Image (cartoon, rainbow, N blue to C red):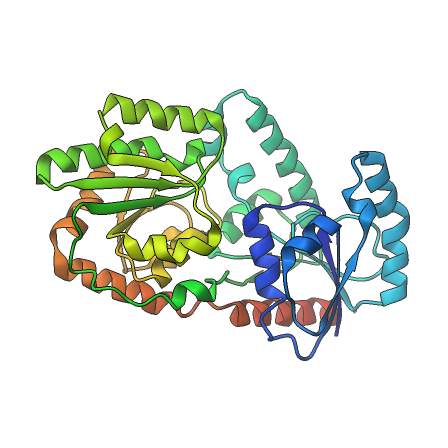
Amino acid sequence: MKILVDGGNSGSGGYLRYLSGVFGTGALDSVEVLLVCSPRIAAALGELDRQVTVLVEPQLDAPQRRTRLAWWRHRWPVLVREFGPDVVLHPAGLLRGRSGDVPRVAIHHSMAPFTKAMYRLYGPSRMSAEMLYWRGRLLRSFRRADGVVFHAEYTRRAVSRQAGGIARTALVQNAVPSAFSAVPLRDASMLSSPVKVLCVSSLHLFKHQWHVVAAVAVLRRELGLDLRLDFVGSGEPRARARLLRSIEEHAATGWTSIEEIPAESMPGAYQDANVLVFSSSIETWSITLCEAMASGLPIACSDRMAMPDILRDAGTYFDPEDPVSIADALRPLLTNPELRQRCGALAREYAQEYTWERSAAGIVNFLRQVSREAS
């Protein structure tokens, strides 16, 4: 089977890890892949499978929008004719360019445009306007596609209900980078001094980091533990300002930190922590949660969207918009050594199921199905 992939010209770090994971697994022996992308994407991909040919198109990085649109209008149809694919894959979710009679499959990645809570948090703002714009474009693409890949059952139900009329869907879980599974499993029953509570996430209003500060402040007073709270990630100024206000309000400057850590240093950051708090209320499939699971960390987790499907019974859960609920979920992990040990070991066991080989095989199988049924 021949697969033409629209790699695009931009994307988050998660999108790039996704492309590298699916097309760099060594699990694509029975297919031929042509991945078309901009120089910027190509430079970030790294080494891919030998079955994958990367075609770099400089015009996709052109600063003028009309140049990029002209490429899609004129160059893309030529590539489709020349390569003769059995199916076209749009990993970013948007169907672009004309592909003739070749069936097309999109991949869904973000729940933010499809979630009422996001618009409630941001109110009338530029962010809300941008999300509405992307929601409209993605819904049109999903309706026109011959198939759509979702990462979790919750997201498949929610988006399918809003889109209506999606031809075919598949559930293909994301994966955990192998570097995290290789981290030696620590004795989670023992607490360090100070006790290190880690919160890894980009700074957005729907991540609710300021509520984590309030919860940890309560537990410091209640338990008498020297708790240190480390935030890892960058993001929007509005969310950062709210987090800083919470740190000031709870006199937390001496026991909190906010920093960015290079991706290659993250396995060590997880291993150095005692507990992870994951407080996002809007997620499709959290790579951060999977990384912490693979590292064997005890986890207190948001109870929203797909998170309980990923972590299952290997952690404690809370309402991410309620500091009292966050404290209630953290408390047993900080006071019960047996619970910490059990949750850390079970989380690592579950994380072994999330492999890029399994993800790549699931996508290829679905592409075969779409190609066969469309023909």
